[in-house]
Image (cartoon, rainbow, N blue to C red; front, side, top):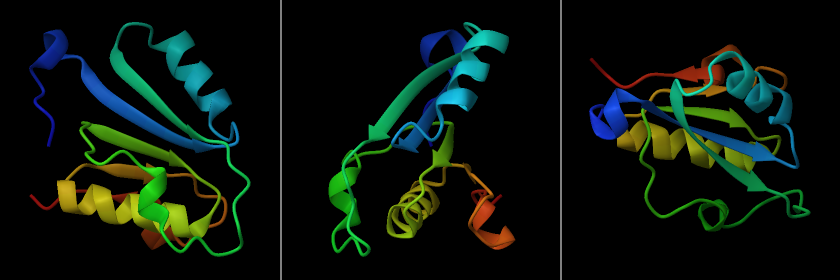
Length: 110
């Protein structure tokens, strides 16, 4: 997990969005919690096929965050992001629109 003391104790939140799907939530974070988080936005704007054979190509090689928010619409990308967060022991919250409850929130083991 990322070093929590980095940047004067600001928590690093990385938001993954597909075609602007998280814009309203990102705007809300910036409006209601200015300066409270180190916010990074990763936007995937490509036209995607029905099945993404290599979803890892859409993500940075290394994921460093205190929290990941997922507003991805493609299930292959969402599954890859969940896998990466679990491997890195980073809490992950996904949009609940199209996924079962078990997929919406993942926390690292205690």
